[in-house]
Length: 276
Image (cartoon, rainbow, N blue to C red):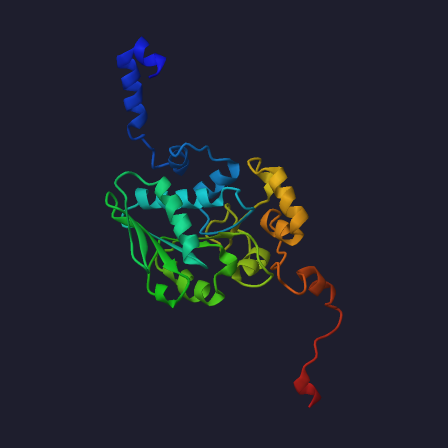
């Protein structure tokens, strides 16, 4: 028993009651919801939590806080807007489940989670909203969403992203967030990161993507010793997972930089039909 109890039993019990009582959260401020979980958002996380950009691409190192940021953003939308739908999709369902579990950390006590083999959902009775996990397949067609989150976007098929996921916000004008660490120099995640125009907050009606880059050096929470272990054992994985470089797969026969060196852009392409 704590010494504080014997010194002031009534005061000790009041403090214990207050600690267990639900914390008041200002749902007008997503950062308040983030802090209610016992964490303090850093500047990069605040940007993700508060941005008005309709399209967001998050290229952050492992353990840099992207899951916490996006799950809080999702839970905040579902608890602050009536009849909202958040759709979470990933290349593998277990990755979506991980993000959904993170959403529960920011969900009030009234939220309930249900699940079947093909559908996992958090429902918010107070707002009649939901967060729904869907597979990266055609079975997700037909849904309408106010927020679409694409986890580990580098392994989600291009066809599913363009023909299924993006269509979910075509009527609601909702937000799309893609996130992950880089893979090979191919696919919609790479195309968006390397070529899509950037979103300008001064011109909010123009098309563009908020592109957020965060390497391990930008996140003081990451242990440098652990990073150095990967750098020495798997240099390409280190560049991809912690430096956010499009370094290609570990089992690739040719590294992306070797392929680039083999290309001579001064040579005009040959149209074989012209030689016939």
